[in-house]
Amino acid sequence: MKTNRDYLIEINETEFHNQIGDDKKSSTVNFQNLLYKKGPTYSLSMRPQALNYCQNNKANNLKSLIVENSHFITVWSQTVSSENATNTDSTTSPETVQKVPTKTITRRYRGQTYEVEIPDYAALKKNHSQKQTQRKKYRGQYIN
Image (cartoon, rainbow, N blue to C red; front, side):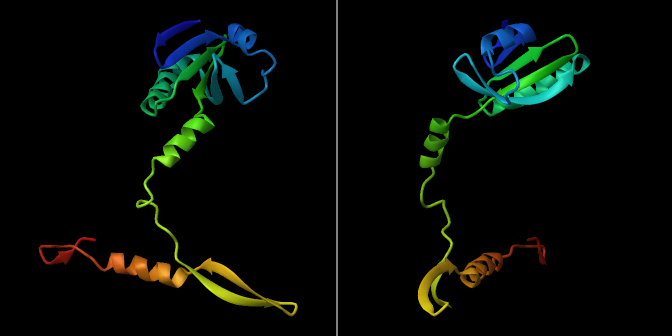
């Protein structure tokens, strides 16, 4: 096993299977306390494309694992843990989340009457059309 960069680990297939144990057929594995999901498989001649895929993972702050056998290279990408996903969701401010307007209607089913809250698509369309009315002009022509 060798680590070329801080975001990339290259390992032989036999070493990889020795470390992960019984998860040989699984699409996700736990390797060095990180969860990895199986990605694309490349032929040995397509190594630059595999490294490019790893660079894209690095841009998303994910580590990559390259498993190499005698004929192919398989790239495994780190998955975002559920703890990290909830942290990123909680940082979203409530102002940026657009709420869908709702309305309450009365429905009747088999003699029973009850109220249901449903999305108000007419109000949503009205809000959307107001945003579209703000058009920009350039040299007398609308550009939006």
